[in-house]
Image 1: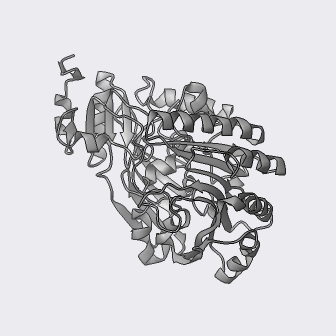
Image 2: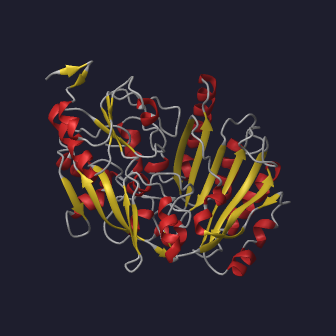
Image 3: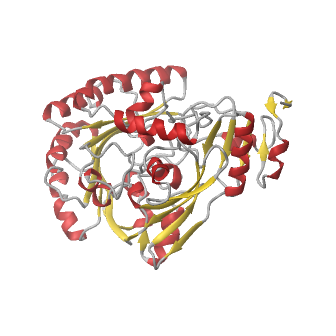
Length: 458
């Protein structure tokens, strides 16, 4: 095989309409950089796909040359290093088409979630986006998709009707519950193990507004707030979607006053019922401790990012999660001992407990690979790793937190929030052993050469 500067001959990629880039080319660096700046990415070749035909050509070339493949849309899932192979960038594929009569949206591979409600809102419809609408809609969905309104409506993958996906041999498939159901199942929670999705059709919900926002308390009241919250969530209906988070916010201009540079306990809520009823339900939370900032209000669904206020700018970070069973008083005490106000110099930017259950606990419409339906809570943490010393401190704190909380866990993670993938055993924690075995079987059927080997693929 002929090589060009250490990379396979690129002549076969000349049919691609988008850019084909190698290290040193103009545009290469921004094309490969992800949202998580801690993951260095230097693939041998980048294909800036403009449509399904470009993805087909790129994968046929990769199959013919034995070149491993990674995929990147918005880069929010790019939390692992990439030092060789082919990167297919789908960020140019941003079309979103709404069918208001059927109540569906056809979403291209590179569209962000914010593009979906923006297109659907004029018809009074909405999609099941997560805490940040800046993430890629397809990448989020194939990982299961944990929505802001998950307790009310279930997982994002539950609403998908069909996918267009290119398998590593360069074949474009349209798959749904009836056509290639095994492939369809894999794409609903199995992440990107079997192919590159070029578009999906997802159901939309008749939803214009919600009651949402954050109730912020000074961090010294964390124990009182968490104790009240952990009891309160056992009484609320499924439409109440909520989380408790401890935030150690840096003194940076990107953080608004009066939150900047302080330690906070926050309860975030999203409620789709009658606003007055929602406000009544929130009374025990507001009474738990002195409220410093209260942003809960009726808002358009298109502004739901204001509920969790996730970071909008790229940063170097270590993200992780752990699925939990019941949040007992002992579990609450353990959590506070690790990351509460008396935990000393905790280096984690945020540590949260999200209330699961409700529609998230009920079976989806047909087989999938989501293995979090038995979880009652999700523990998630993020630490900024701007220097080697930061990275070491964050890693120690993350491991200590997971070790302390593992007795209360299901033993599994969620693939989208898992963080940087480790070895085979670590990656497998996103699925039960039975589902992971099925995922391996289906991957071998569709990717026998293991070309899709980066990230969270088995």
